Length: 298
Image 1 (cartoon, rainbow, N blue to C red):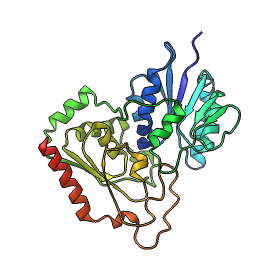
Image 2 (image 1 turned 180 degrees about the vertical axis):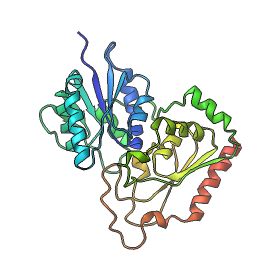
Image 3 (image 1 turned 90 degrees about the vertical axis):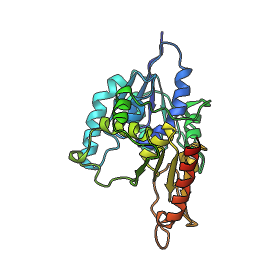
Image 4 (image 1 turned 135 degrees about the vertical axis):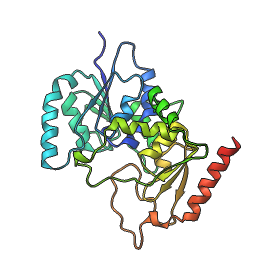
């Protein structure tokens, strides 16, 4: 009898979900024939899961939940999904937060492997994340694999490629994404643009000669697509969030930076301007010129 589905869980955020993909790809290669792999995702991570070949089903949950209304929605969703998710016979949870791990246990009742620090019960095996370590390696330990390829899969569809080609993006174009961080008003659904349209962002970036932006979802897209990327870092650590050699990092000069990796931001306690403001324009221009020069030589 074939085991029930393997459930893979990374509900948020997009960049963090992308970092799981090398480990998941390797895990899927070794999956017993006939056994399905499902993904449990939130709105921000679903696009990463839905593009990965080998995931039979991506289940979208309204997670993370914000406020009383969000919690009520999540509770109703959970009750409605207990039956199908209890079919899963094992789980890999790419999260540290014990609340997420307990929620997944409630959903599935299955034994799990997670990135937690301390097991929550005899049903859980933990593989703690090490401070400053590349998160992809931490996720690989939880998955029980060692990837042979650390590139992140995010395939551009033929239709998206044709759309990007029609834009006529000239050689030497730099994609610039100045955003990053969480939008404090992201619980206003009326402001959202459909996620499938954002997918075309990847196609447009893929036609550019370079990328410039803060540590963010678009930066992870550029790295996944092999576009030379200059990425600005303040409180986050490039070594923890991007595979070695996949980007050109530019950091500030504050002694307290970086102050976190892939955990929850502790809040800035530094004196004076925040660390992102300590990044000099000249440093960014120099890094971008080097990237464009290398692209020109190729």
